Image (cartoon, rainbow, N blue to C red; front, top):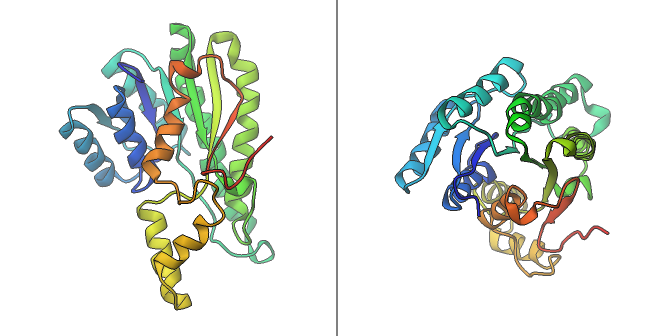
Length: 259
């Protein structure tokens, strides 16, 4: 699906980020992967390489313009072009109610989730324009559809990113650059497993019971595996969606359905 495409992925972490890298490589992409944690980032690059793929690890803080430009430069120097960008990196303030929040913490979240992602688009834009096109996918969250108490900075910054998707799709289409949003919900993987283990211990229940309770609200009947959600994100980079831009793809097993 992504054979020989050059793809940058930000926000490489133990959940969706890692699976995005592994699944993109399986689909044939050559990768430049980014996160602030050098050790974890390099371990994911080694995983990709061990499975026969190609990846370079570029430690990056997307809140810093120079880091974004360095990431794009590293991809071009290694591979000669940039076909795709997945903006998966984000930051969030402490999960406490709005009235207790320090709005400076919200501003910090916006600097990464929104403006950091926009800086990455700026960084890849000259190359994509010169080669006649590219695909950008911004990763949002189902919480933009169904907010949770205390998650304001996450919801607001991801909602802003979704608005940015539509604006960029409108302005960059003339260059052959497509911009879309993937909107994942629950994703079964390390971060959610850890969250449920902690929550189950505090509430005196079990992870299996919590998971079953969530699955009852999902038409497909299970919590979507994070690797399958990653594949849905990557479809938006592929030529199978060559005529799709400005769209939001719900990736949640049907828990939330948009018109």
